[in-house]
Structure formats: C-alpha cells, structure tokens
Length: 196
Image (cartoon, rainbow, N blue to C red; front, side, top):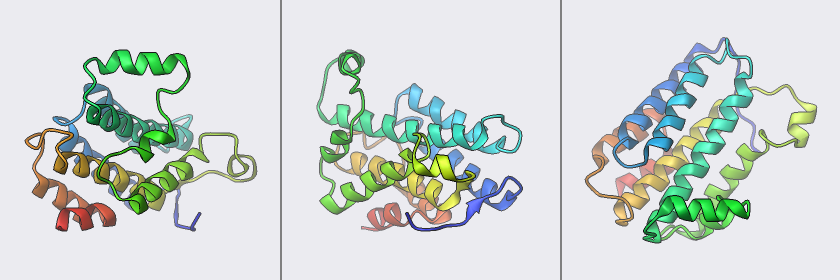
C-alpha cells in the first residue's frame, strides 16, 4: 500500500475536503441509487464530521466506506442482470454468506480489466482496516485521506460507467455535475472517464 498523509483529528483541511466530496457524491447519487445507499453516505458524512468526538471514530468511517463500496457495486451488478426482485436475490445470496463477493467486481459489465483490478485493489486496501489484519495489530489507525479519496473515486467511476452503459437511468443525474465534482475532489480516474 502506497504511503499517504494520514488524517489526524485536528486536520480540518482534510476533514473539510472529505465532507465536501461526500456531500457532493450524496447529492448527485440520490436519484440514481436506492435509499439504503443514500443512508450509508449520509451516515458516513456524519461520522467524518464527528471524527474527533465519535467513540469508534476511524474504525466506523472505514467500515462505512467499505459498506458503501460494497453496496454500490452490488446494486450496479444486480441492476445489470435485470433481476425482477433484487431484494429476494440479495436475501437468497445472504443465506450462503455471499450477498457481496469480489466476483461482482469481476463481472461488472463494460469496465476494462485494468480498471476492475484497480477497483479490487482499492476494495482490498479498505478491507485491511476492518478485519484483524497486521495493520490493526501493529499500528495506530488514522484515516488515510488519499485512500478515502480513492474509494470515493472508485464509487464515482463505477456510477458514471453504469450511467453511460445504460445500466442506470441516464436521466438520474447530470454528467457535467459529476465532472465538476471529480475536478473539485481530484478524482483522477473518474475525471478521465468523464472527459471522454
């Protein structure tokens, strides 16, 4: 994992940037995704804002980032399959403890293999912080601003790709608004996709 600047609790600039990006993503996604995903984003925004006052702090933020990433990929994967009752499908997969799997990343339609690899690597990076890995055992955990931005970049990238490929309704959001958000938050991969 490449090193980046960890977010210390008094890093107001980092918190401000993340909350701005999360709020922007929330506003652009609210008409594209189900309510439960919007609720996750809302809770993530609250947790980042209250990072210095929250008991579970950084761990909650990492868990919410992972949950958001899984939920958006799961939603787009299921939407691309044109399943009549998505909730029943998720419930059925949950019985086998497979409501989300890395295979869903692999099977995202119309996304190049190198981008799928980037998405999977980002997913694995965030997973290190929510499982009892060596990082949790040996380190003081800080919120990695660059990793948080990368996760949001992945989410925006997958969302834009789903809109452009017709998996999600093209009228759910304005791509110019998404491009503006990608520029402000410096979401490099999403910006490249939106510039095409």
